[in-house]
Image (cartoon, rainbow, N blue to C red; front, top):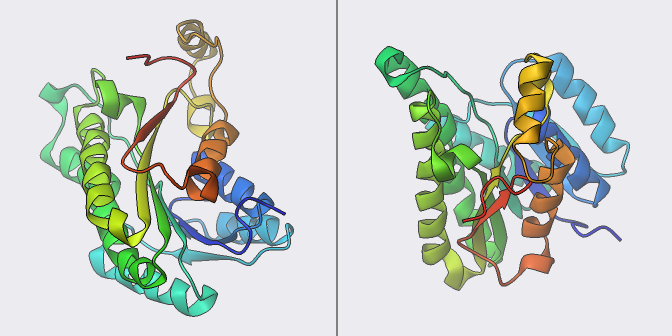
Length: 249
């Protein structure tokens, strides 16, 4: 028996990186997975096949999480197709890094829209079905950068820190309905994005981490399984740093 047997999870931005790692682990743990993607139909079809191989139901939805109406439609479609929405993982995110002096208004707005507004859109879309069920777990993918800031990422840091305040407020509002809301703050996770970086630079980062390695998508996925499952039934409003010890305060 998997820890997420018979639960249905919506995971946004799941065709690569951390999102894909979460989707795979959830399917292994028995969850049915509805996932969103922005553009690659091919990657979505491939992921669908990989997930259903675990004997669960899986379906990809091309959906823009930053669009309010699209989020409402997605939740309605998933409810119709899967019957319940037990877990929401707000994972979709982008970066447009630059020093504040050089960030354009559009670069700021886009990052806030995709990273933070999407959390509002989707959380609002799933809370009604979750309230009806009197159960649900919402997990927001923040970042070590949202917890302590980072030069050259004011837009990204603001979006990821905003998630933390949102998470705590939702936990306070919906706790009486048995809906939990927590955030995960990943540190340096090795994905397709980081594979493009200079190896010497990446190694320098690894040396600065107490555990002396970058994290893998599975490391984040395991934390998500814990927060989505009944193992964390008494945990809400928290931020879990999954960062190899980068932040200890």
